[in-house]
Amino acid sequence: MTKSRIREEIAEAVSFIRGRTSHRPTIGIILGSGLGPLADEVIEADIIPYSEIPHFLQTTVEGHRGELVMGRLGDKEVIVMRGRAHFYEGHSLAQVTFPIRVMRALGVRTLIVTNAAGGLNPSFQAGDLMLITDHINLVGMAGFNPLRGPNDESLGPRFLDMSQAYDPQLQEIAREVAKELGFELRQGVYIMLAGPTYETPADLCFIRMIGADAVGMSTVPEVIVARHGGMQVLGLSAISNVALRAEPFGAEPLRGSPQGEALGSHTGQEVSHEEVLAATKAMVPKLIVLIKGIVRRIDGKSSPSS
Picture 1 (cartoon, helix red, strand yellow):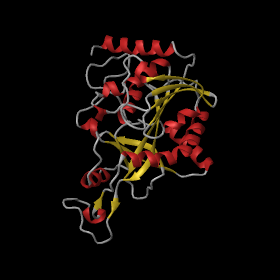
Picture 2 (cartoon, rainbow, N blue to C red):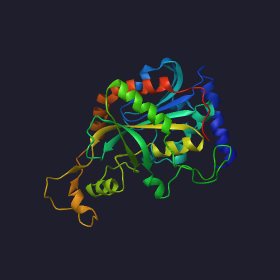
Picture 3 (cartoon, rainbow, N blue to C red):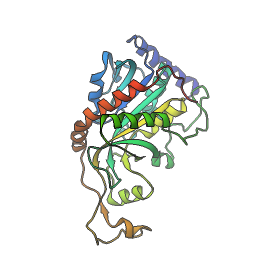
Picture 4 (tube, rainbow, N blue to C red):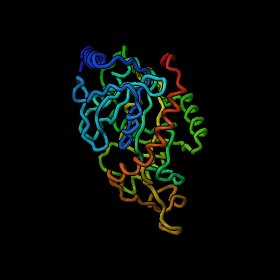
């Protein structure tokens, strides 16, 4: 796709959305699997199905309703994506991240991205919320990056620094809010795999060994495009299941593992999408109060970082 055509498609989507709402959001929120009820907290809401917005992908995954919700969350104007498209559905990453381009053109400066993820850190439990401090772009390392192809300098730089993909100030706000609410906010590194299959036990051992604390099938491309557009990003994972567990002491170490003696033998627990949705549903109340507290403290007048 040519640079001019990309700009045209963004402009067409922006024009359509502005024709359906008087809200002018500066904060965007993406809701992952099972986390959609947060959108019900938006007041004076204007709701647009993705199917009506030019060039938006429709969602096909259970737990992703597929609509934009624009209105007020506390004293801030927000735009909420109630569900997302995924790479594993057969789309390009440029298509998957198109809504982020549109958000930026609508004036969004801060993006809060959420997901349901499998826990890898042995100290995590199902029901935890994890602040994403960094990510591992395993899909990108395999050659799939949303910035691949011709670069439009009006949208962002050719070579993007990702040393602070997740904004330190927003992370500190999240920690403070969680502390005031009286619950523990885990912290860790999120890794994206392509999906749609869940991981084998060997997959899980490998990604834990390279430093991942939680695993999922989304988020990273959206964060890249948001940073490409100069947006500040906060990431939160709802730990829906513990994807990695150790066998009893004395089990045979994983063959070929340089840390096999320390890791022991690990095996993944069977998981289904239905179980993920059920687990995240239980976490929604905690996520709602956390995000509302964070949004309340965000300066909606701040300029996007470069």
